[in-house]
Image 1: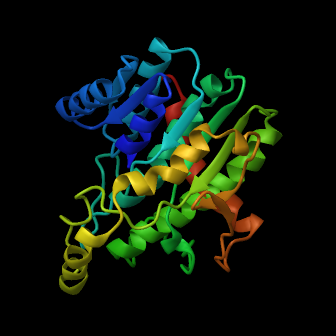
Image 2: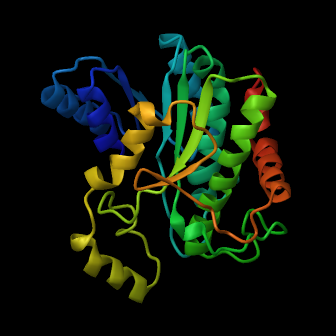
Image 3: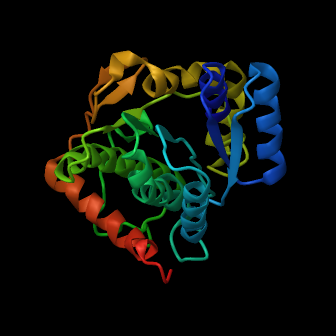
Length: 277
C-alpha cells in the first residue's frame, strides 16, 4: 500500500521519499516509480522500525537532506508470531513497529512539518481495534501476550494517540499541521501476515481469502486522498474510511484514556529526543 501511495503522489509531480528496511528493495521500488511516472525526484531512506535508535537516525538523515516536509504517511505495520518477542531495546515487537516507531518519527519530524505552509500527517490504522478492551496494567503484554491482541491494541493505541495529537498540535501553537487516521480495509498487500504463525485455522483462512482480497492500490485510495485532496485541507483529528469521516466506536475511548496512552508512548520515546542518545 505504501508503494501504491508513493506512486500516485509521484504521478502528481511531488518529491517523494520512500522508507524501506532493505536498500536493494527500496531502490528497486524507486526505479519502478521513476520508470512509471517519469518523476526523478524520488528518494529513499533506510531504517529498521524495530529499532527506535534507527528511527531517530533516519529522522536526522532526513533533516540533513531536506528542510521541509509537507506530508508524512505512517504506513509501516507488522504482526509477529504466537510467542512474544522483544526488540534489542526491550520492547514487544508488534507494538514497537505499529506504535512506538511512528510516534517517535512524527515527534522528531514535527519541526520540519511545521515549516510547510500546510502539512499533513496520515496515520494508517485498522478497524479491528473497534471492539478491543485495553489493558493499561499490561501495556507491554508481558502477562497476557497474544499476537492478534498485540496487533489490535497497537492499532487502537495508534488511533488514540493520533486523535490526541490533533489537540496537542493546537496546544503547541502548530496551526498549519493536520493529522488524520485512515482504515484501508483488508487488502492483499504484504506477505507479512501470510508468513506469520497466527494459529493453524487463522493461517489457513488468510491463505484462502488472500487471493480474493482487494489489491494494495484499492486500499491506498483513501490514504492518497488524505495526502493530496483539497477537500480535506485544514481537517484534523478525524478517522477516514472510503474517503469519508467515520467514528471510532470503541467504548473505552475517552479523553482520559487518550492521554494515558499518549503519556505511555511519550515516556518510551522521550530518551530519543536527547542528543546523547
